[in-house]
Amino acid sequence: MSTHITIDSAHQLSELIKKAISSSELFANQSVQYHVEQEQVVLTGIVGSYYAKQLAQESVSRIQGVRQVHNRLTVAQDQMSQPILSTN
Image (cartoon, rainbow, N blue to C red; front, side):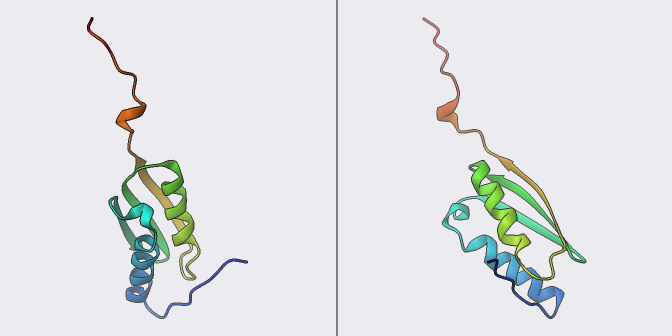
């Protein structure tokens, strides 16, 4: 069962998107921005995982009044997962 939130204005839609993104601890130290034009939302910025990227999209797409989400979030490369090169 999905939860839908009803909106009355573009301002309320923007506030609901902000709340949806900020409600998860996954985005606490992330750089997530959004732009709303009519009923379309564009997500941009950097997140720490593909899970966080998908969660942001899912959270925003559940809001009634959002017709389409363009997820342009970038997943930051974890420096620990990069191979370490030795000069020895």
